[in-house]
Image (cartoon, rainbow, N blue to C red):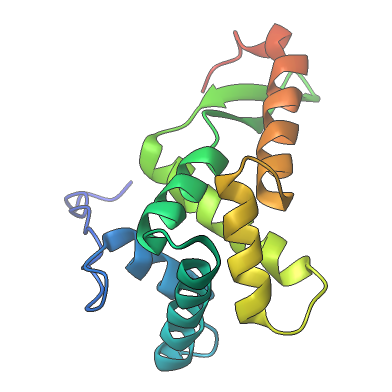
Amino acid sequence: MSRRKTPLKRSPKPDPVYRSRLVNMMINRILKNGKKSLASRILYKAMKQIKYKTKKNPSLILRQAVVRATPKITIKARRIGGSNYQVPIEIKPEKGHSLAIRWLLSASRKRTGKNIIFKLSNELLDAAKDTGGAIRKKEETHRMAEANRAFAHFRF
């Protein structure tokens, strides 16, 4: 067991355009092969497209999409007595937001369409309206946790 101190939790810095930590987290999750300028360009163009379509503040729509896609509980595999159980556990809000961002991006990548900007903006708009792939993933996770509620006493 390590005798070192636990590292301090670092919060992401806000992005320069919208001054939002959530936008910066989203850019860092889009990031591939260390190309942050490309990732930020993708997100900013998607936000501009959202503003063009809805005539509303795109950072509010992004926040609403992430909040609606954030799960409250999830399941975790736990081995007890030689068999594996799917144990439902509550998750912290930070972990829930990171899962929501990951699900939004994976759902937008799976969509059919022209390019990632078009797909990402449509996925964010759908999530803000409580539809789309990320919302489906959240509901599926909640259903699995509800089905395995009998194993909730096997807490971690």
